[in-house]
Amino acid sequence: MIKIILILISVALIALVVTYSWFNRDSDRVILTLVTAMTLGSLGFITKESISNKTESVSKTFPVAVFYSIPNYTPLNIKLPYRFDLHMCLQNIKPTDLPKSETINFKFANKKYFDALQYLIVKTIFEKFGQGWNVNVKRIQTPSGESLSWSNSEGKGKEIRIKEFFKQIQNNYFVNLGMQNDIPDFHGGKAIFPPDISYNIETNDKYNSSLIKLNTKYISMEIKLSYSSSILGIGEYSKLFGFSPVLNIKNPGTVKLGHSVYMIEISIKQNYWLNGHPEMKKHRNWANSITELLNSQFNYEIIRDEHLRQFQLYGVEGIKSL
Image 1 (tube, rainbow, N blue to C red):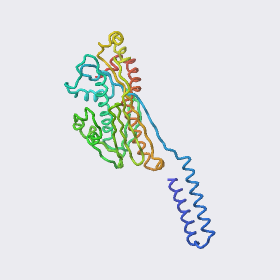
Image 2 (cartoon, rainbow, N blue to C red):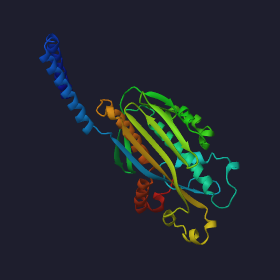
Image 3 (cartoon, rainbow, N blue to C red):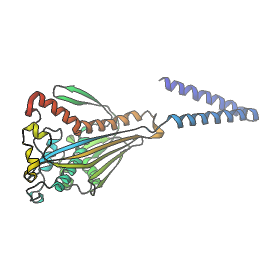
């Protein structure tokens, strides 16, 4: 309110000066003074903003891990926030598409799990923004661990159906199966985004990477998913589950378990010219909410810390999926 009052006072003073100058427009002295004052004031404002007004941006990068076994390449029974949805994807692989080899085909696994994660990232966002885009997210501690608390506020938005969004994605195994067509509206079939949103999805099959671009007048957001590495076995989980690590060294061909790691990179950039706009806070909250959502859902570093805590409390049962 104080800022509005100050702006009104400034506008009133400028209006008085301009009015006075208009009535005395035949005076060279008045016109010269007006032009000098307005020019110096404008230059001072432009100089000050050029120095202090910066392009505000933030980025976050974190790993995503998947664990699987042959011959079906379905996810292992390790408690992951996205395991159920991951399983729902992988169980839809046609038997005729599965590799026939008795050792893990990492090329096959990497592509199918990349497609599944690409699908799940979009589905996760749509599930949370089904009621509106003007949200506030807080991290809270519950008896079952840390979680996110969501609060929606009313506001106009643009409704987008997930099957329309997925039309931007090329060569995704699960999208090509039409899985998105079976998602009900109340469970991610549609989402509400900012009114002026535009979106684009770029996929690079050669490097197993994809880039989701979400743009509004105020915010530009990019979500990149890329493949990182694949390794035989399940790493430290072999010890936690009591599996023999000797197999990984002595007889790698007999190992039926594997895991792959992907990276999610999120970058947010504010519109340089609208940093102080009243609507900027809502758009920034929206972008930050997506970041918090994906970070809490997929960040393996957070998941691993929670697994170690659960293992200390409950043993193997604390990290096994139901």
